[in-house]
Amino acid sequence: QVQLVESGGGLVQAGGSLRLSCAASGGTFSNYVMGWFRQAPGKEREFIAHISGNGFRTYYVDSLKGRFTISRDNAKKTVDLQMNSLKPEDTAVYYCAARQNNKYDYWGQGTQVTVSS
Image 1: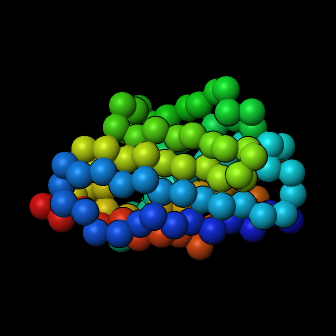
Image 2: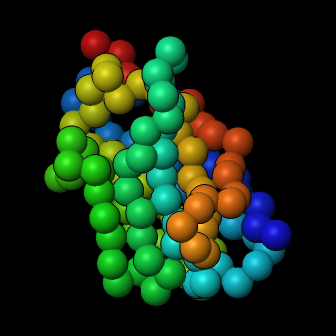
């Protein structure tokens, strides 16, 4: 069983940056692919990026590639999402999630990001 807790959300002006962090407990962290997702009001949950267990491979949704960067520290059992050049449309609740197979089995409670214009 893995528990995930996100932090780092908040209010930022358009063009600014935020760094989200997700702390994991339970399980062997490096065994899990970690992903970041977001859900804006009235919209479906959207995949942002994932990172392999050893941190060597990353994958991003095309629309966010270049502005968002995922990274992990297996010693600290954290996965971060650096978000730059933020836009009002990036406003959403951001979630981290963990999977060992094809399905994300573990989810955090989410952290709110609000980008003002």
